[in-house]
Length: 108
Image (cartoon, rainbow, N blue to C red):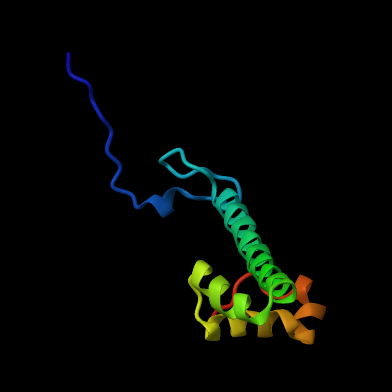
C-alpha cells in the first residue's frame, strides 16, 4: 500500500492571510505569538542590564577601592575601563530618571 503525499510548492509566507492569528503551514506559533515572545525577551534584557548596573554600583559602595578595581574586576572578567562604563551608566542622572522609558536594547 502506497501513501500519497501532497507537496506544496507555495512559499510559507503565501499561506498567511491574517498575520495576527493564523498559524503557518508547519503548524507552528503565530506571528503574534512570536512578536510577544520577542518583546518579552527584550524587556528581560533591559531589566538584566539594569540589574548589572545596580550590582556594580552596590559593589563599588560596599567594597574598598582595591578590592573593587582589583579582585572584583578579575573575578567578573571585566577590565577597569568596562567597569567604569557600567558605573557611568548607573550614575547618569538622565538614565536614572528615565529607566522606564528607555528602549529595551541599544541599537545603532
